[in-house]
Amino acid sequence: MIYKLQRRFILICTVSILLVVALVFSVILALNVSSLNKNMDILADRVSEGGGRFPNSFEGMPRPDKMPSQKEPNFNYINPETPFSTRHFTVLFDQSGQMLSTFTESIFAITEEQAVEYAKDVLRGGKERGWVASYRYKVFPANRGTGVVFVDGSTNRSAMVQSIAIAGIVLLACVVLVLVLILLLSKRAVKPIAEGYEKQKQFITDANHELKTPLTLILTNLDIAESELGKSEWLDDIRSEGHRMTELVNQLVALSRMDEEKHMLDIADVALGQMVAETVSEFEPLALSRGKTFGANIDTDVVCQGDETLLRRLVGILMDNAIKYCDQGGEITVMLHRGRHPVLTVENTYEAVDTLELDRLFDRFYRADKARTFKGGYGIGLSMAKAITEKHKGTVTAYKKDGTHIGFKVVL
Image (cartoon, helix red, strand yellow):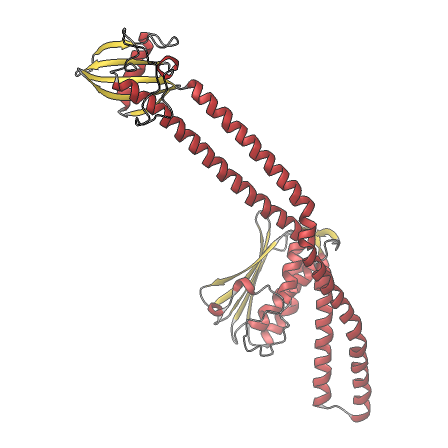
């Protein structure tokens, strides 16, 4: 169980770290994409303000020789070299949608025909801003119609991809480093639990040795006393409680052994269908004697791999539980079929089913009866059933049916 807890601790930490890293990476990616779009839009806005060209940068106008005023928006992004380092092209259309002119002198990779085709695609799309290939575009109103300006963002995109790749590598390296530390420190993290668990197992083992001897002496002396004094209801009560105590100790030891990771199963082919049918037939007279109807639908051809002794105990626990907690005059139904896996269900009527905490039924010493009136159980039978099922890599669940039945489903 400790190794299982350690693996679960590592898994939870790993998933948590991966989720955090994925979130951080997503935020970095979103911020980079947003920043790229914003910066490209700044350039597109500046070009559109000049009717398709950078203001004061072409057609014989003075070359920028000083930084923009600090009062200007985007001061930190636009500088005197920006008009000469930005690759862009513009296409102008009249109000009827006919192409008027193009400006492609500031870019080498695009011909006039390609520029016009890009611009027409943008106008058909109907969006004011966006991306076409590696170009950020903006649709703006021109003097005689509409203009579409395109700004080359390939360099900016490459820089962004590179920065994101570096961030991803750094984050991945951090994840690997943290996971290595978790693997190294996981034993120390679960050490207090492991120590407590070992003390618990030692206590159960010691209690088994310390209790069995006096219980054996008590039962032996009862037989001697009964032979000399004759039968007595008081002696019968003592014997009954002595047997209950012995059975409880045995079950605690068995449950403790089931929790051990090194507990080996005697795996073999098990005729599960026949075994369930045999076990059911053994409990049927007891159910009928207590005024409870009995029904079974068992596929006797079902076979599985497992420990026959433990599987027989599993079926017996579920049958015993159903008989003990079935309403007077109620019904018990057992079904076994094989789909993808063998599925065993045991159902019984129980009027108070809506008051049950189904997720706690498999807890040790949990009793659904809050008053804990005696019905012959100890509250560890279903815990044993769960342990046996998990040892066979299966699952056992409790469920409500029709508000009047409780059922247990085992998938092996």
